[in-house]
Length: 350
Image (cartoon, rainbow, N blue to C red; front, top):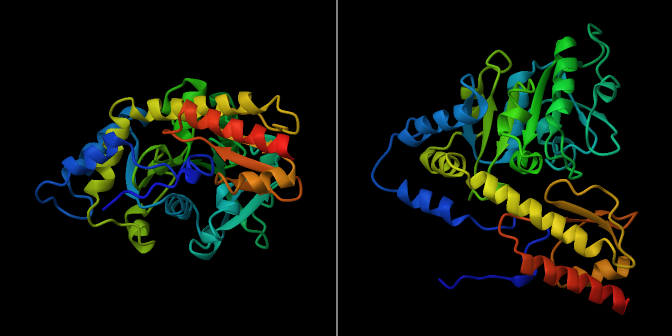
């Protein structure tokens, strides 16, 4: 079959648009020989546990799932009783981009908090962490944060530790949506456990698809007392892969060496390059800090409309004209320079 590549799709709508890293494809091919026991009792999934423990500590255990929405829903359902709720930023992916799955599928009440930069603080958490013991209010039980956030900002280890300390003092748990955790760790040049285990996070949704996997994410329990029943919940939520070796082999290839770091550094570097290329263009505003691989910009509406006929990217806020550009592990300097040149061209034409 002839490959079908559309150059308009490269590479600024989402890091999900990228293909599969060649080392991941090789790992899938190598896992394809012979028979393995199904439903996670294969040698690849067994080896994967050692890989996750090396990154997150001896107490860590991982459950591979198909996608990020499921990783979040299974994590949060395992951390909450039916009368309990999750505090999150108003912009959190679980609130804005999962089609209501936490509420509809998981039956989980979300208590949202407006934030200026996508990041929660202990003070912001307290806007919803109240009413303990009030039978009329869903009981706050979990604080969920994203790193990298949906606004492209990055929590430091100290910021996460402050959130965890505060939540634990309130008798609450902390979940981290890590669909772009690798980008955050690369941006700060810290190990993955510095942003999770060492900071006090209880349960992690670890992302693979955005950083080079074909498919697959993982629920990673860092505090065994924080979540129960994941073996059963994963099946209940239709996330138990029969041929799990092909998910696990991908994660092993990603995490056993430095592939995750190489991919994240490349995506982040291209985000910085793009921001630097457009920041001084007349008619372009970059209103948010570029801390990982996301660039937010405000353009004239007619320029955006013309650019979107040449390149795929999302309008973030129709009212303000803010757009979002994402760089991926396979975004190149040539891709960035061509896109920046097209932006300058459309601005001049406008």
